[in-house]
Every structure is written in C-alpha cells, then in structure tokens.
Length: 427
Ligand code: PMP
Image 1 (cartoon, rainbow, N blue to C red):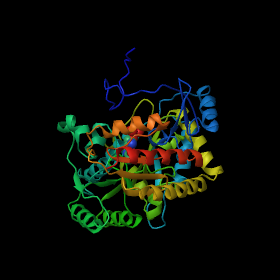
Image 2 (cartoon, rainbow, N blue to C red):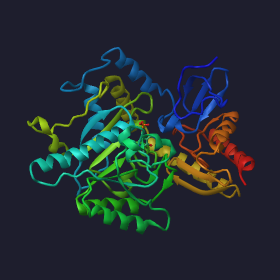
Image 3 (cartoon, helix red, strand yellow):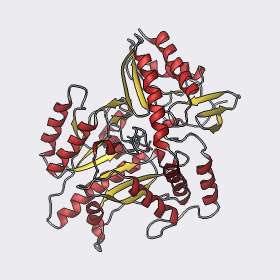
C-alpha cells in the first residue's frame, strides 16, 4: 500500500525501508512488527532524557486538560513565565557582559534562528531611526553552518544541493572559513576583517557545526570570535539549537568559552524532546531597542503557537529534571564511555577524523564512495536498521547523539555495528 505521507528528504520510491514505530521508551523505539531500534541520534537530536520521560509526559497530560492554547500577544500564563525565568537562570553569564534577560518563544529551531536574525536587524534599524547608528543588514557565518530549513535560516546556512532550488530567494551572507585544526588563526583573521565592515551580526553554532558535517572547534576559538565581535560592536548570535541542553558537556556550549551571546537560539531539548518549543533569548539592549510606544519600532513576529501552554508545561518539567537530577553527571559518564569506544574504533583502518563534543561523536568512513549525493548514506542507514539501530549518516560521516539514558550494553551494540560498517563499507 502506498502512503500519502511525504517524508523530509527521503528518497521516495527507492525501496528504502520505512519502519513503523508504535511506541518509545528511553533510548528504545518499538516497531509495529515487535522489533526494537536503539535511537542513537535522539530522534534528530531532540529527546535528551530519552523518549516518553514520565515527568514530562505527566506535565503534558495535566496541562492539556487545564489550558491548551492561548494567544500570546498581550496575554500570559504561568508555564511561559516559569520557563522564561528558568531559561534566564540557566543561560550563560559573565560579570563583564550584559545578561540574557528576555525570552521570545517560537516553535522550532529554524524559527528561533529567524527570530534571532530579525531581532538583530530590528536592533540596528531602530537605532538608525534615532540616528544612533547606521542601519546594518549583513550577517556573518562560518562555512559548513546549518541553521534550519526556512528561507531565512537556509540563507545563513551552507549552500549546496539541498537548497539549490531556492537560491534565488536566499539573501547574501559573508562566509568566514571554518576554524579547522591548524586554520584557526585564518578564521579569526577573516572574522576581524569582516567585522570591520560593520555587519549586523555574526551567527555561529558554538563548539561544533552540526548538520554541515559535525566539525568541532575549541572553546578558545569561540571566546576569541566573541571578543572580535565585541571589539567591533557586531552582535554575537549563538545558535544553541543542537548544542544546548547539555549536548557538549555544559548546559549551553557558550559557557565553556565564558561567552554571553547578545542573542541565543534554543529549541530541541528545551522540552526534553516531547513536544515542539523554541526560544530566542536576548540581552536588555536588544529588547529595549524594540520597546517603544512608536508602532514602527515594535518587534513584528508572531505565530499561532507562540508559547503554547502545553509545550511550556513540558519545558517546565524539563527544567525541573535539570534542577533536581544529576543530568550533567549522567552526561559526563556517557561522554567518557563514548570517548573510550570511539578511540578503539578510530584504530580501525576504515575510519578517520574521530571527533567529539560531549555526547556527540563523529567519525568519517574512508571509502571511495564518499560524496554527499552518493548512495552511501542510505545504504549505511539500511545496514544500521538491520542491526537494530536508528542512525542517519551525513555522507560518509557517521555520528552519534544518543539520549543521556543510553546504557553500556546499548552503547556496545552501537559501536559493534559501527565496526561492522567499517568492515563492510570501508576501503
Ligand atoms: N540550528 C541548528 C544548529 C540545528 O542543528 C537545527 C536542526 N538540526 C536547526 C537550527 C533547525 O531546527 P529545527 O529543525 O527544529 O527547525
């Protein structure tokens, strides 16, 4: 029976298996045929505490029967207030930098980034209305960046086959070379030159660039990037959509560099992954630039589900888990267990470039069949499926981003399958 469901960049019609998942719990997905899969990428990097966490599920059920939805333009509810207070308390801070003090809600990582970009341009636009600054609109990004799939978020991401169809609609950005090992200074020098041309903002995935290839760079480089932006008065926007909620070993990756962004986008694990919610945090100057009795200066962004109460209730439960349980301890132990196994795998001749940021590990399969458009990734996906794993390689890069509840047996099964993939596909 053919299905009318259109899956995101899935090769329809090519006989790839589409597992039907009926239930999930912790790191496991239960399929309609009775088998299980280990969700080694937290269902697109989202379910940080594992699937169907009982505290989050209970909070959702309770809220669904109390207040389900509320227009958020000029109305409020306690879950939204509580999440905002909790986010501000957890956000990176430093004595010598303005605090992230305001929270704007949306419903996906892409929109959190769109909102961040709109805030940055709105800030400069509104300052220019007072003659306090020139309007600015250029955005700086690193190459290999990924920030989402809406037109604005695609504009600031890596250009490639996956967005070629929409190139005419994408706006221009200035791309800074990625700080690859040994190339850090070249990156910082290019950022310095670009910042001197008065762009509006530099937008960056802190410590690791995700969908663009899982490229890791150091906290020192991140700290230096932020310092350059600050010296030039360029807004520093951190996209913590993937790195947030403990992924890199701290609640937010910017913490490791002592950096407080002017604007920070978060999503994915904000609800522990159970329901969509996103937030864009901003410092007082960004907020104040939009707080006005002059209607021309308001921040024009609204969407139906902004601060949906059920999603916010899930986020309240997630924040309580972070407050009351030793989540960072769990992350540290999992990251160490992953590091040990990655080191062993890296000795296999079929693998190269092992890298890690907290509970994200990545390694490249050495094979002649490595292009992004080759059928290697779908064949690897099928290979892992047969071994009971949900994994989605990026070209020849295999990465893991499991839920923090993954146990040692499950981790061993994942690495055994990676080893087997090296044997079968490696050259
Ligand atoms: N930014 C980053 C760094 C991401 O990794 C992603 C999603 N992978 C996004 C933005 C977009 O988030 P979403 O898919 O929720 O729109």
